[in-house]
Length: 433
Image (tube, rainbow, N blue to C red):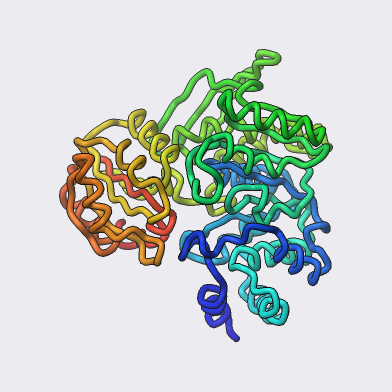
């Protein structure tokens, strides 16, 4: 098979959660363990950092990878899902996995794949581990796909674990309460391995402390270690003054990931940096500052309060659940606050009513959908939105919806495209400029 045929094989032959939802989810680690055993356990051949959370784990993963590679470490990065190109999931120092490796890997694993029938995610996790081992990365930043305890990535023994925001998402798999969801995420906490908690509530903090105590893992709460003392926002960057509350030291950071929700992610990465340096990593202040200011350039991360045009301002954001929508609304309020237009498309297995209940009634809406089986049809979305007094028109694809929003918007208006990672992936940025 050539590369195009190999990718089609992955998409069509293996159950893929991002396309079909819960039917693709395997509730144990058996297949991943079998695959990695057949590959001589590549996950044991490099250092790793493991990151879980409802929101923020992708941003934290990319920030940390940017800093580590800028500090001179050959750094692997595994994240999901991708926006446009499958190879976005597996990178080394910001460069995507080669097409030749993907073709070769799928051919080499076809026999065991046919025997154990792994999911798309299980096979791509094994692919990432094999690639990182073959290319001899010094460290890899590994983002969980869903949950933590039973996530395919959870066969690694990292040198550090990080848990970001805990919110309501994938309740049909992870549980209906924050305690249940936090318990699943806490499954990445390993015996004796330090863990950073980015955010917590009183009910989730108890869960994390209990798990850490059970396995004798040092635990650090980022929001108790650092606090933000000042924020300066532009549509292209975010400058923050951060105080270390343990010694009163203050430092200024500029982030090219400029959504206001990145403030919490920054504190998690600062805490992680401190632990890594205690373990012997050398990260200069210069490398750190450059890494934070150039995450997009260094790692290729997009879709997090991503401004792609001005006059009117068009922002892409992968927010798709309750906390994600709250965060982009908070970012919108801190930006210049003109008339707002939402181009929105959701998937069926999200808490649609909760998301719609948060959106402002005075905004203009353009209801659309991604072209995957999981997508909620735009007509159903418009009908549900109507019960929350959200009014707008229907569009068969996101690019037509953006064109309509641009035609209706004034130069000082704000157009937010959100609701689904897959919707953002279908945006044709070349037609927007």
